[in-house]
Length: 196
Image (cartoon, rainbow, N blue to C red):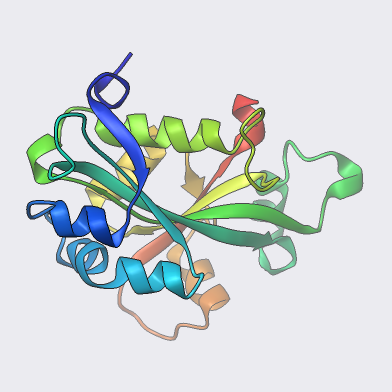
């Protein structure tokens, strides 16, 4: 199967698990800060739900963690070419609507377990989790706000995600950002119908 299926336990990421864990770090200060300081209050305020995989023999070793929450793709705000691309596999009668989605808000792999293709295993799990028979919410798309850096963008592209906007300028306009600086994150999406 894979590392996660063979050697780990899947669980909600709770305060108790965090208290038992030994310095979970994915090597990104922002992600580490979220998983150590904000994840519990984020869930308490109903903004998202976080999950983790930890080693079978010890909750202290968190292998990876991720957060999901409900989201939508508002097609009326997309440029025409992108609207057509996003809705490519949507029946004509349903086009130009608000499409249901799940946001993968945070995804981190422990530095101790990086380069074992665990990120792809997690993505495969999340994709299957939101497709029949496990479909949790009736969503059509997965969306991410990926760090606008080579490694994260390449990871999501390798896992079938595409940019929501073909250019950063389009995305800046959508977000109301007036700046010459590159975006810190890029919106990307995956159409779950492709694996149903």
